[in-house]
Image (tube, rainbow, N blue to C red; front, side, top):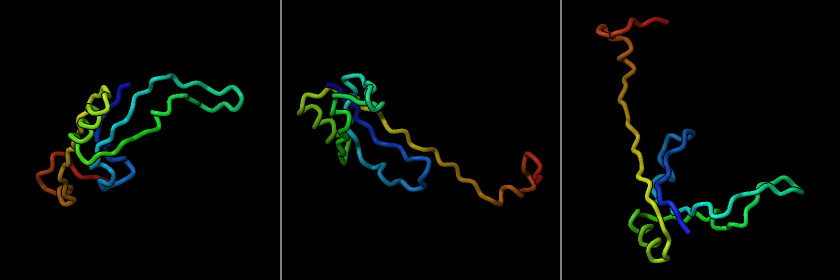
Length: 101
């Protein structure tokens, strides 16, 4: 039984940082998924894949995994690099490329 601990990144569809401050412990796939021959749905007998445990800190998630005997790996979060851009910079005289329509 193995799992990964990570902090989710902001989705491309949101401008805020909602749901990105928690740490998630998510179990890895133990049994391969298969296609149900009758309905064509993808099924699996591994119900742990459906679990996502939320923690406030990385240390809490690691402590839980150690206490329960779960092999885990931590995926460090990648912080977004924000570039400050001013609209007026488009019209500067010292601009490297000429402004055109």
